[in-house]
Image (cartoon, rainbow, N blue to C red; front, side, top):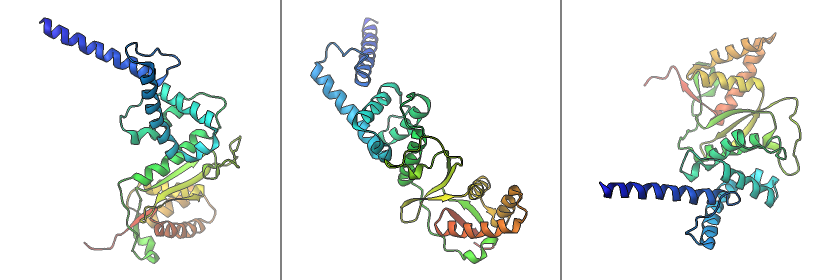
Length: 263
């Protein structure tokens, strides 16, 4: 019995030491260093941990990094490192954890108003580039598109932002959101290249319908978006939408299955 009690006590002490070590590594300004570890060694540990986090953030958010000077970037990374409790132990998921931090914990009036949207856009590009899915090129005859069923590629994400995130750069830093939102579809093609297309609200809705009704017949999809638009000439919407879908099929944003094809 005494042996078990002793072992339990050791576990509690070790856990407390872990918390003490981690607290200092995260935020040395507000937490004391462990008394039984040399300050130089703790400084080395902290630099190693923080530099790993910083390198992942810099690699995955390159545009955001160029918008901030070294001090601003360091302070942003330090705030994330100190405040955010990651739910995943994997380094590859740090960018998603950073997004969660920006959305739910970051609170600085000095930040760019578009920072969260820009970071999300950069995260999407990264997530698509490493996604395990593959999408082959469409080889069906697109002249018969109305008789094909449609699926949104798992490597194509329709997105809407208040800011034109695809244009943001050191020479273009909008202070307020434009009157109209920006609609995009970001996708990875069969050559594993990640690209984006700026689309109209109607095209965005078209992609939403396709995503909501996987395998929907093209004609039915176009009919639905034409009815929703309440355009006085629905045939114009259907004709224009058909041409858009052909272009998206060529880029593998949507994948097609010939309903009449026998197995």
